[in-house]
Length: 211
Image: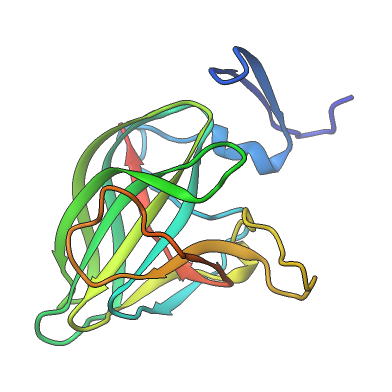
């Protein structure tokens, strides 16, 4: 039985070789506005619900990867983030996309695209042009790495974050929302570095535009 106002959708699952049915607000990311007409909208990684955004003070030489699910695929042409407090001279960042290892091993694996270096010495929205066709039903990660001088970025706060990475064995109060690992600033590596740990709470808002 359907609840009033419940979102129902279906798409072909290439892994299961069958039709996958989605129901409930948690699957509402099946529906996304593409292009620029009638409006242009962007979609952030790791957002579950709510509208609670804040800021995140980044740390140089730390790579963070935030989950982005692509239930129906699509093509991304831009990645973007918002600098709310710029770094000093030489401040810079890179954004990119990694694949998850599998549906049951959620560790980031191979690099899909490195969006290149972006100066973060001024405030405002920074955008990288890309061209990435997403595979329907796959999990990706939007990654961000800062160097030289760390900027503060617009962020997804804990109440709005999707706890894809669950809870640890202590059964405490912090839910896993992203991966984090130390990495000297450079071009994003072809394979995600080993020994990353699960981050909890808020994380930088990295958003994508679909064509």
